[in-house]
Length: 263
Image (tube, rainbow, N blue to C red):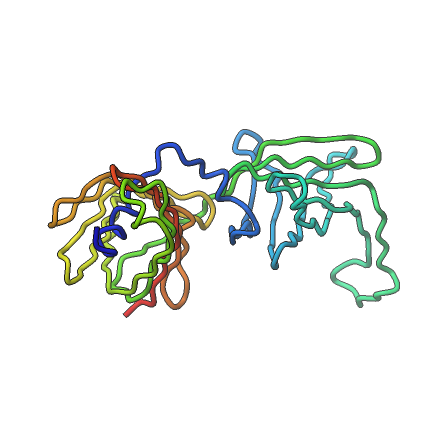
């Protein structure tokens, strides 16, 4: 099967694949976002990721019912076999914000530990302890506004395919080309790719948690290939867009990344 046709086979959903396995820091998932428990609005956690370190602010209410916050630098734990970050948790106090800031008046105290255990790209368990009180909460990315990916792009799709009926098609593939994304207000999502082999279209429904988008879709190509696919970790950038995908058809299973500069 031509490489480009296998590329579009990559735009099929890998029904047996778990997005949880893709949510691994070593493979590039960005956990930076606002996280919360939608059933417990009023508290949450802000996560900022640099490399394999998460800086986490937990804003909650103290024993006096007044707002308070705790902070931790949580480090990726590859030996855990999970997408787990952990670190020490601190509480701080300092001078009033409206007065002269005296660094000598800032005090911090270790109160316990924190773990951020991601089960997928968008969901995690936050466990932390404060002076012996242990809290464990299911959290997810908090959505504030939908991104709009509509535009014309030029970029690449890099993927690995395996389990192919023809073993010659197994292996690493890199493709470059133009593609068009249309995402109207009803959040349907269409990606059209043109090539010398023909035209292919991917159509599905867009959803989003935090700043990460997901599309579950069907695809069809003019040369007879069709199937289902999932695009996930879709992010809009100032230059264009990036994302990842998993796929499966009657020829191969595929997992890869995509990205494009907006034209």
